[in-house]
Length: 323
Image (cartoon, rainbow, N blue to C red):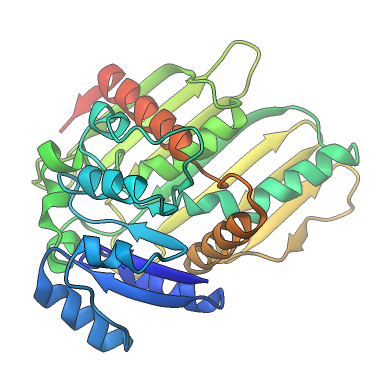
């Protein structure tokens, strides 16, 4: 399959390129609103740079990864939809939930959103444990994703990530969407209540939040804590990542490089095959391409993206602001 990359100035462009090639697909062409950025990326990758988004769409790729400045992405996404080209819509795709909703893909449009931690082995293991009777209802969970200092976005040439009017927020709106998506999986996609929330620029003198902590719940459902931030004391990839789910009879912990499961039926904690965080974009792309071939909906679709944005809105509105 042939995949195009639009907006290669985005810091995830290299990850998408790697994922495309790892999945056995080819790159149709790349494009960026800044011609020099597109040319440099194309030369480094050994691929062709298109002169415009229209020229890239005219190549009729099987899939187009759409990414870039949030004020520009909605128009790029609408052009892709109008051309009838399936897309991966990278985040942040718009400053606000209302701006995101205005993209308005039709019911039959294929729009995959790379909330790649859906590929965590935790989810399949939890379903398997439930099916074999080793796990009951989930009672509590914690989803933590904390990366290095926010100035790395300036180093990556996307300093607008630190402007709340453009990025829509800070760590909660950016990294936190992965944790919020995980929470929504446990709540069946229904927006939960916010029991407590604290958000603030507590470590760095930036206009966006660098730390957020929220506790979510629904009557009769689990209690879920999400924690996210730019407060890890290293710029090395990975940071502090941990997905923990406690269910009746079972406990699952995904730390990216390790994955452990404990059940009341086991004599010891089991270490199962992990999926390192760096490999999850690969897994997401391979899954997306297979779903395209099969005519199935994306693993994470546009409606899922809207819900996590709405949940972030609710947390920001409810939060005690810390500084």
